[in-house]
Amino acid sequence: MQRIMLKAKLHRVRVTHAELHYEGSCAIDDDLLDAADIREYQQIDIYNVSNGERFTTYAIRAQRGSGIISVNGAAAHKANPDDILIIASYAMYSELELQKFHPQLVYVDERNRIIAKRDEIPVQAA
Image (cartoon, rainbow, N blue to C red):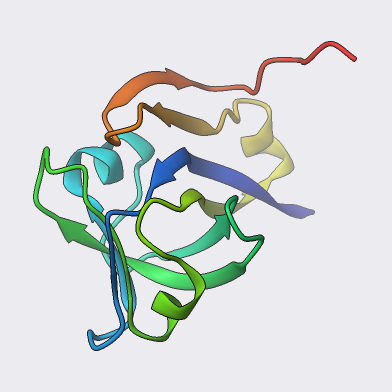
């Protein structure tokens, strides 16, 4: 059996640009792509915490160290500058691969600078 699992996420990144008249994609600071092991042109799902929108697009590289998160093309209707996003990638794993599976979770500050990387979501008290 194969299972589709969360491979990586960029947690609570802040949109810096929304470019309607640009070829569709999401430009992401190269440092963030590397930290989450997301490749350029890889499919990503975006969850807009600020307005509830959820959509799929692909990642492109933005300047390393810039903090850029630019939602482009038609998706620019679904996110505005300063919106908070969760950007996720998924992969299919076999039962054998799942024995060593850990997602790459990247947490950022208000300027999209990496502040923590984890391989599990902490359990929250009820």
